[in-house]
Image (tube, rainbow, N blue to C red; front, top):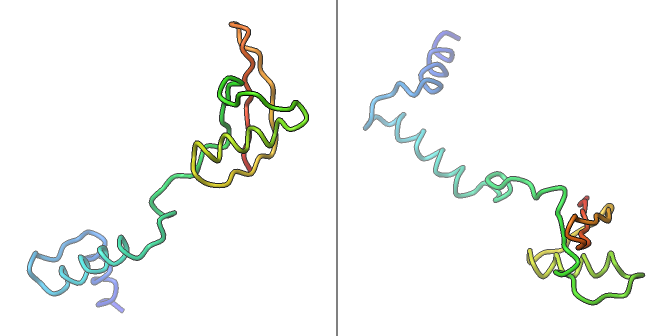
Length: 103
């Protein structure tokens, strides 16, 4: 039991000297994690709220606002977008913007 705790302590504090087989094994394990871990482990989540200006959307049918915003965001980000809610905001300049919340 003492050997296991001693080994874990050495690994945790990286106390093996360079050139030892233990050091090499730790480096290989780190490289394997970087190479084979899913890409989601290294990327932060998408923002949950995005501001879309009406000028970015262009002409659209008022009944299809959600679809027009979804199409614009999919073109912009290159992947499908799931929208949970849309809030209309009128800016001081008079331009209409939408706060889009993603699922």
